[in-house]
Image 1 (cartoon, helix red, strand yellow):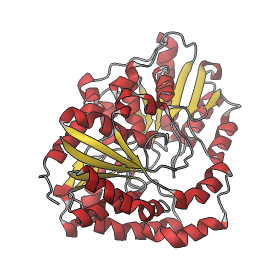
Image 2 (tube, helix red, strand yellow):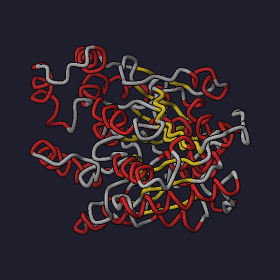
Image 3 (spheres, helix red, strand yellow):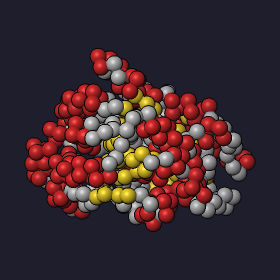
Length: 432
């Protein structure tokens, strides 16, 4: 079997959607004759944890090496345990590490020699680095330079052209640093894997001088049928129109337009608030919690904290409608966003209510009959669309849903991992 070394900051027991892509690659690559070896942090405090994948039989078959990150222990303690977001220690970290893309580059400087030893010991055939954090790609460039290993650079979220980045001086500074490293990474990588066609087009257009389009491959996120097979469904027992959102709100994303639309419908007496249950499951910051509180007097809002992955899937599967929000316009780069949450929703086989801009995500939902789409910032249009869905539920007691099974099945994790395996097989065995 060929061996691939997967370097990922996001890996269990860290929780959240970012862990699923490397985890499922590692799960299904052996089905295609490729042995995964995972490199991830040993000590990596995070805002949420999920230990449940560690108990799965397939996980116990994955060889996992863990190293670091002692250099960021103080940072984690201040940010996630003490909730102190403006401590002077942050500025010290900025001066020391931010020139290397982000704070997490401390992991690279602490553990790169250890990773080099692992690559030699395991005699791996190629390396895959998956971001964010984008400093993870320093590992890939290092192994490429030291061992001549074929390097696959996997990008879950855009780097320089990230539409979710907050505006301001700091964002501009970060963009400039990423622009510098991006060029070096793209030149060194043997393949660049992205999660959407617009992301591919953005990179190719921005780097016309490098002629790298032939290097770029699209492998979307997906869902794992095995995960949903273990979830109980209680369809038919709900007396309220249950709308569920799972995840968090990062950067410029916000539920405010959706909540304002519902508030308008309630105040105009077009919907009965007692018919609704709007449920948010995940880790939410203080401004978002304050936003929920502001609307909670108008209609029922249930806030459930971060849950293990399978529990999130339970809430998805046991809902009438799944809320998806990408409130960044196409002109602002929102069409690049192919959030992993969307694919989980597809796996749950529940209709999606999507506030999304024009682009691939909007098109897939429409073509696959996967739910309802509406312009993300048009409150009047959101209200009108939701009212039509609500009326259908009131009349029939359910929401009609007949997804295209062929389009749905194209997003299974096993099928998507086959694309990665084909790419790995295209590299000849490296002699070191």
